[in-house]
Length: 351
Image 1 (cartoon, rainbow, N blue to C red):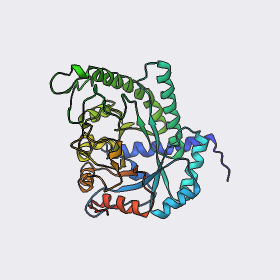
Image 2: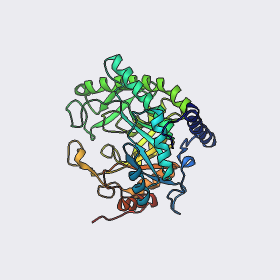
Image 3: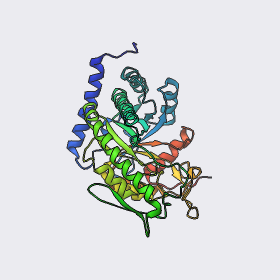
Image 4: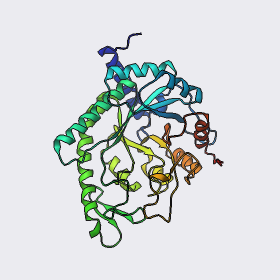
């Protein structure tokens, strides 16, 4: 079989994905979660819930042996990190996945730099995100995962409030932040300034990408991640909703921001904007100034996230879609067992 793809084939792929998402959005304007419509399997569900969740693994370049092992383990799809590729190569990857009965449901664009001081740098990262959108369409994916930017580092800085201190007050129209903690916010003035710059430049960048996303039929899924921005559920949800566009939704990592608020609160607040999910566990350290470092990320059921509560929350917001594991665990039957337990709303005792 030829590894090349004609322009007609590529445009046909894009049109098919676009038509599917538009049709799904017309059926459920509030949900916009068209993932189940694209799945090539029945997914995993439970009689306790009305919604279906599909299991995915995160992979790099599409690989024949890797796909075979994932199918044998019990995965139904993958999310690829190989965003910086041509549509032709991505289309080949789609064919390889389909050969194994898998779906490449999303492309992890990851970290962008929309708040760079240099306009040339900002445009470069916008152009790179456009490359990811075109690759996603050719992969047959309906979403890219995007982190618009970051400030600071993973380590707690004295100019950034601790998770316990954060109490963000923002203008619901402009999203400008004027307060991030109780009392005098003067010591956090640098943070407030950088947060507002990041919001403004990210809105401008994402808006510039929406026409291409709509043309290709690929949703821009903004992820909650350790970038020190939009760290509380209400603020993050307001940021995503500010675009007022079905092509910009929430890619919710269920473990990333547990130190700021319980995952079920993130689910309830983001609600029907959720287009995809990641799963990993986290051990919240109530005695730690930063609520727990990157060392506190855990494999499923090895932290203190209440997964049965999270599953009920997902069902309550009518989330039908994909869940990609991001724990770094072996992508084997044991991981499938744990993911199935989450989907069934069960609690597991490990060890």
